[in-house]
Length: 407
Ligand SMILES: [Zn+2]
Image (cartoon, rainbow, N blue to C red; front, side, top):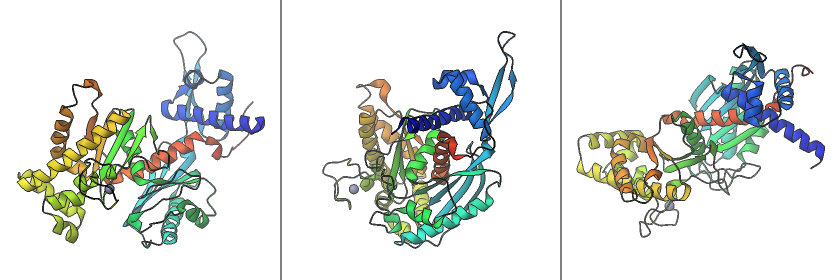
């Protein structure tokens, strides 16, 4: 890379540093930004002039610093200047939202879609239609800076963001979903990203958490068991893009055979199918679906039904074992249980705590908090919005200048 390229890249990165700081900590003064980012005061001034020319930042009055020194001019981000579009597609429905740079949703919609299982181009059609509807609903004076799509399948960390497989959609081979979407949206000039929906949900739960833990592992049961890992505020995708999938973590070396080819996988003990079958609700699950069967299990637990309690005891021990393995390796301080695991949390939690009890002597302070997810079915969509927002803040140069920066 040439020096000129380097300096362009450095400038873009620094623009992002300054905008992110103003977004998270504004209104704030240039001096504070320089201290927090490590950039020189002159550099911060240049970046602020550039961001102002792009309409992303404005001066927001003056703070007098107690009679001494010069008055400080405070800077504030203008969230309405740009918008992002977030899409979450499952086999049943599609959620779509338009948000501003503060992550505030300005329009949203949830609807069934016409995507056909096993036919990736038809899913791309459905996603492209949703993006077009969202564009129509977006504020006309806001620049569209990011489109992000979350879906149920591991997404590779290659440049193409290949969906490696999506059994829910009947995709058993890798699909270049991003390219399929982009080909249908030639009028969209901003970057388009495809991410895993459970990773998105993890990011949203991390953000919603009152304590802002350093490391979060999310374990959610829906059709199977999915999840994600967020370390220091970023989704950890791993070497192949498939980190944070706890469903097929072995929790017993001689456990039952799993369809994945291994034995003793977590999903075989704590997956909805396993728990509801053990509790005697497999017929309801097949006939009326997961929501109804999961509710009936709660009713059975409430009235102290032995079989239901036994099923959840097994699930709790399996989840506890998985958490011990995960935290031994990663020193995670927060584990969030989502989907039906959040619904069954009051019964799972004491079993998980009991599982930890033998470990307390080893490193007493290192035990993770285990909490139920806060966001419910909206988690993935909120996570895609947050993902898109962060990507947009990190690269403000995608917003065109409205005028030349003041010297
Ligand atoms: Zn398995």
